[in-house]
View 1 (cartoon, rainbow, N blue to C red):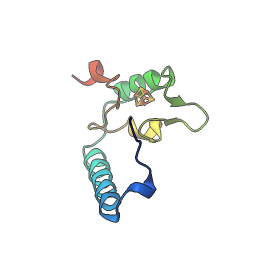
View 2: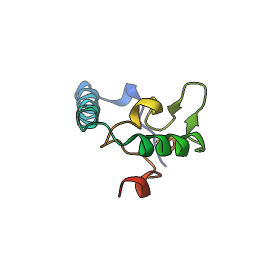
View 3: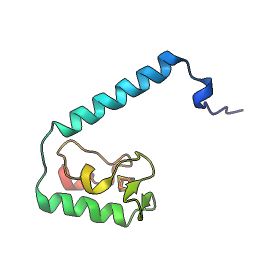
View 4: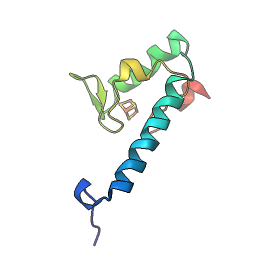
Length: 88
Ligand code: SF4
């Protein structure tokens, strides 16, 4: 039987480590610089057609990011790898 962990099941060390990991990811992404406007626009169009995109909040349901901003950075990645052909 699969048991899903909730925040209540995690130790403070687990929670701290998870937040440090997310902070490192955000820092790496933001310091990678801005991507070409055309690629940013194409990334955002893919998000708008994606079932994981929350239109009213303009956020990805998986990563929780505000996509008009996230799509601007060189190192940003789609968690489902839908943008891969745009940057490879
Ligand atoms: S980042 Fe990827 S999974 Fe999330 S909304 Fe955009 S295309 Fe969909």
